[in-house]
Image (cartoon, rainbow, N blue to C red; front, top):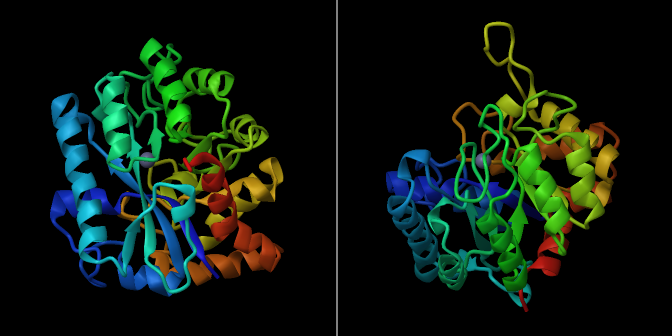
Length: 320
Ligand SMILES: [Zn+2]
């Protein structure tokens, strides 16, 4: 069964720590042997720039991550291929894993629409408008009382992204900016990686109304595997152990809210240290398949969540 994933920070770590995405025990959650083990056909690759890199350093670091993605595809064409158009979407049986560069936070654009065109030319096909902090587009979900919705630049950015065929990603967006995006978009939006706020009450997690709004516009919601989003912390702020059964709880809830056709996986591998006890990397995804089966999800439903829905979404959003 194929696996397509909407969010991993693997190439951020490749760029930052000079790690090898082909080595099985090179320190990354996601690497080629584990992708093959998981039947992975596609990975949206987060181009994440930490808050301390705002302005020109953010742009420079984003370019560095993109260069690492390009290098992996150029040096290992049987293993990885850049995917930027509908006709380059997988699956190609036995073919390379499709990589889609995806900004996590629009900081590298520095409030400049012409940089969107440059990043598009470098293969970027999705943009998470903010991370946790504020940027030129909006306040992020970590800002204690986000008052603003989208800035003027943010509005122009969303329109230009849709014209180019760049997915509008609402992960990490607080309510006011999220509402603005929903009123602006004409094409299906996405939340690439989140938990369900109905199960774990964090502002970082999407609530039922947000998930429904995305689904109603033909979009998809990606559930992540980060224990901090999956189980509530105890009174001391410590996280209890989490496992694939908790991921399954969030997936089943999202399906109840959005419908089976609108739920995907965005594991956030390489974006956290303490993983689920039985889901450390893509090679362990059979544990999640089993947990979903035990929750009564049919094989066709599991397949839709594991790859079919994300591929359908991208077929609709990517340019010809
Ligand atoms: Zn994130």
